[in-house]
Image (cartoon, rainbow, N blue to C red; front, top):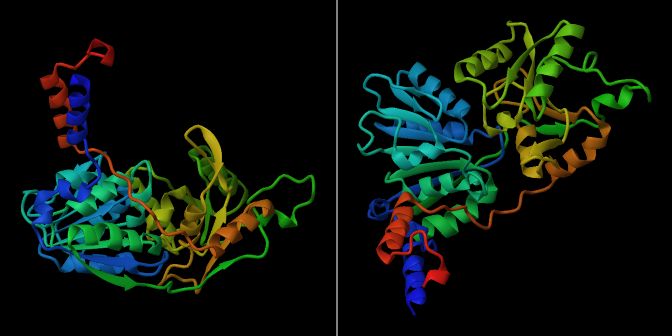
Length: 378
């Protein structure tokens, strides 16, 4: 019937079962994927960025504009001309050979002058995000589609098998695994901050916080309320870091916290710090283990708890270990469970149709005369 022919035509135009075949230029190239896998504060991203520094032309793709801006700053300070491109801002440097961008920009190869010039090295950070149902398709597309001979991917070991078995092998890419361990130990404190309180006493951070502490709150209202409380009731000053903070302000806040002579000894942050920002944190304190997601109050997934907690105890900081605790004793068992539990290997990567898919789909509708009609019209 006409309807069956129509549906078969649509199906052929929107087939998503072999996404590695969508990128013919990349498939014609002999690529090598180097996987830098390990926990937080293990040096995996640092090692990948060293390879990027040595390249004649290269790009960094990260999950946050804060991270892209950090790499942009670091490369330019090292004398490597680097551009910045995120959804919020663009910065172009004369004669740039490198670029730093959020991963969503990978599909258009923006962020450098002459974006069509070949790249020598690409770094894709936090590659385990390819399993995320909301943003993961951007990581999958970048890994499948970048036409670069040397691609360094950094992330948790839970993504290793998926990157190797389902992506590198299907693309015919060479694969190299490099594993890392934490430089400094990470320890969970035995008691939460509220254990010394009397039954009817309201909790206050004053008297509990110490230099190098980072209090993690999952909404901006709490972040600023905690800062006001600490600065009003103690002699400490607080820096703040969260995802929508302008990059320049973020850099200033991070610099204040990392400088032991600035007087800003406490950091109040969102879950944005879990994505690899370089901060000299002694202790992570979870203000809560709950956050609002899609309008509902949910418990923070154990993968996020583990990643955020791991930001404590950075190598070359003034601290010889990383510490983790919570404001409430009720939250501590769940945090302990998260830290002790291995993260399950990723089973699948997210994908979305490409613009070419949508264009072909639309063209099929036009040619069939079905646009704007229902099946009852056939």
